[in-house]
Length: 243
Ligand code: ADP
Ligand code: MG
Image (tube, rainbow, N blue to C red):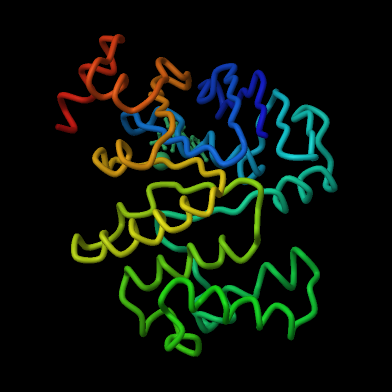
């Protein structure tokens, strides 16, 4: 269970997240949509303190953090409870696929190397990349690199997986295999919070869609309601634009 209350983030004089409340049930798949510059990435980044929120309370599983007073230990606990999939994969260029997946298991989770390696090999098999274990990112396609990025997040076994536009940096030919892997993750009842512009994927995978604009959640509901019968004018406008 994830519970966020009053999450607020400013950059200088600009309020980018404006008093966000959000609950996510175990195993729920929540998709965030909205125009660019409305705080979608910032929301994801604040949930694990990649960006530091000014105010708010974040509870993920057994971890509860008050943003205003969060110390190093709180931040580490949040990072352990979450796993992040980045738009640009964010793999270490000088490490193999297997080493990229092992990294957080060893440094963040403190697992022994042989255990981390066994886990990485298992996850690579699940992502269909068993034969790429010793390949460096430069030798992989964009789709394969993002599957390593997702594999890295899967390996952590986090309470919450965060996806920030995981397919938007990909050539169209690689989008399908990445979405397929995300479907497989969803089938495992992994709790997921996904920012995406892939509307048909959102419709298919989401238990709930959130529409964000101007640092607020303007409207939310099940996909059919949000995409077929949007109430807020700003959501109607957004959907007309993304087609
Ligand atoms: P989205 O993901 O919805 O496109 P972002 O969360 O990336 O939006 O950005 C929301 C707003 O915050 C934008 O106006 C952006 O310019 C601003 N912003 C994001 N990161 C920073 C930063 N590190 N410093 C200053 N402004 C930022
Ligand atoms: Mg973004």
